[in-house]
Amino acid sequence: MRIAAIALVAALPCLGQQFGLTENLAPNLPTPQLIVEKMLEAGHVKAGETVYDLGSGDGRILIAAAQQFGARGVGIEILPEMCEKSRRHIKELGLEGRITIVEGSVLRADLRPADVVTMCLLTASNERLRPLLEKSLKPGTRVVSSEFPVKGWRPFAVAHVREGSLEHIIYVYNMGNIR
Ligand SMILES: C[S@@+](CC[C@H](N)C(=O)[O-])C[C@H]1O[C@@H](n2cnc3c(N)ncnc32)[C@H](O)[C@@H]1O
Image (cartoon, rainbow, N blue to C red; front, side, top):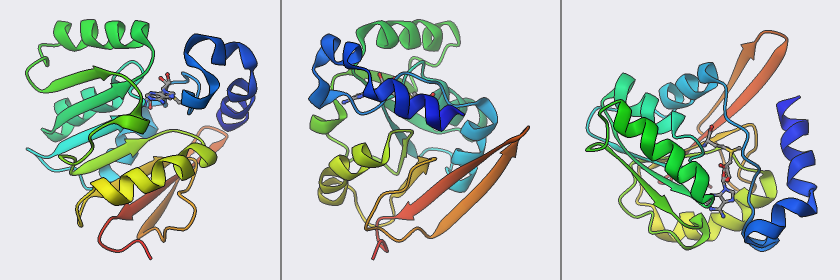
């Protein structure tokens, strides 16, 4: 149902009024907490590594990465209100030294320092991001995509996670071995 909602909302023209349709890679629909944890596990996030969440929303992936995996986090988010909300929450949790939220479009972001990239975008958005990911990410960087694959890449793992009556899919790629 979440996938259908994402696809439906993404198609709504009103979303585009805020920042232009060409920049809109997905609506703001938070990932269920269970899936957040499974994504970080599937990406083998280790203490001290840097996780980039592309379209970081309320910051939940980065907060879990810092609190449960000892990672650092960088979130890139296009909606100013979500940047503000996530920064406020990160500060309340005392994680401001570990997590940075950058306001802007992931299509123009510097992703080079990432050890792990997480994304909950649409298949077409993943396709648009693919050249930047291939250009920027070093071999060994894991890319973890919830629900939607990166077309043209071979995953090294695909996890199926049941949450109530819903089944979620998590695709994991290693930049050293995508073809
Ligand atoms: C499906 S939500 C996922 C939020 C969060 N990562 C999570 O898992 O809960 C997608 C997010 O991407 C953001 N977004 C959409 N297009 C973007 C872009 N070009 N650059 C940065 N963020 C973008 C949306 O505002 C939204 O917060």
